[in-house]
Image (cartoon, rainbow, N blue to C red; front, side, top):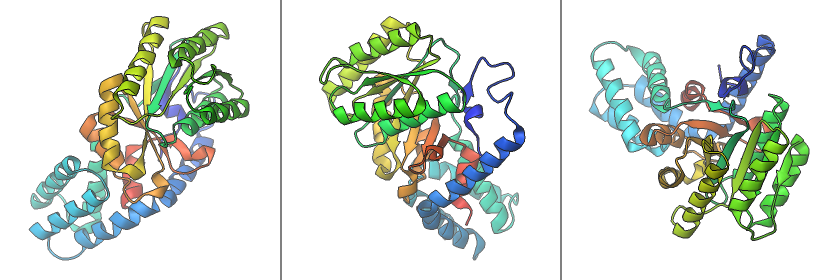
Length: 333
């Protein structure tokens, strides 16, 4: 069953963040999310599952079968490297007689995809006081919305006090959007004059977080293309300012990636990772693409864990990433 917010965060709560949450309620929520995940992953599943079913359930398992399976996975943006690894292992196990029939093959394919998507530390540690989360990404990837939803869940689900730093000082709409989210979530929003130094806003946000004894400080940054060297250098400067304020911060650097961009998103994550040491991916707009396999490619090929996924506009449609549930949603017709 799908992971929930209590699985994602490491806290100082005795017994963990979910200690006081009834297990039945969590199971109901997880089932509800898995249902929405399957529904919102419909485009990718329709593109992939039908081909997988036709390939693994019909005819002999010959060379053409494995080539068709590779093509289907690559079309879904699982990535050439990840696809090659998965298909090679599946073919080997089938030849050794470990797998018989389409159901076993499909189940094992799902397991292999999930296994390769599981990399690095899949948690977000919010024990530092305060925890500083830096959020980066290209324009239009859903960064500001994801920050607002994350702040809401931290506040409403886990009872954390949150300060948001609006360090995207070049886009007034981003600041206004964060202020609306701040009101909705009950969070302080720290901002500066339009066009002011983003590093100064980040510095002030951490100072406010300390002053208010906040649990978490989330810092937004201006969207930028990975090819814009001056803006990438500015991002590195923001990170240095944060580190001067708190030597071990940022404790988490999340990057939003638009799933509809496919392999370009993989390249973006690679270059941002080189600039600011991305520790986790927020993969957005999965409901609008047939290329949802990019989640698996990013995790396996870049060794950066996907920690959150966005599958719609609702608050509950930003969720912790679960490789097992995700792979199942990709393949289950």
